[in-house]
Image (cartoon, rainbow, N blue to C red):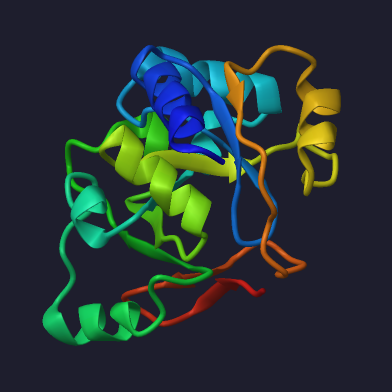
Length: 185
């Protein structure tokens, strides 16, 4: 992935586009989190109900701060011990975090990604991105750009080619306040 490709993807994101990119385990689909039209389009492509909520990825916690309440220092130390990395944390959502992101939950799933290309995309975009697996509901997540193309047949605005990391399952999800594992890796 070249700087030119990153600029093209960031441009698409800033103009309501949906971008596919490699992550720790699978290809992700992303868009601007505060663009309701883009998020609704992404949910329609995946055939995913809004009430399930979405994950946001970022290159650092500051990109996530507008969407979640900052946890107590002890909890934040525990979270930071896993970031950047393949652990997604449920944090209390800010009251103004849109429903289309958090779904029927008071929390929001967030991750500081360890994937160099996904983090570079967040930096090029200038903020956190929606990140959901690149597959229609009920289908296995794409691990290669060719599968992404097969699933979405020209309905994406950009596909960034690159390698997914060696994780064979989607990232682990943990509740930051209780420590409970919601989804194991």
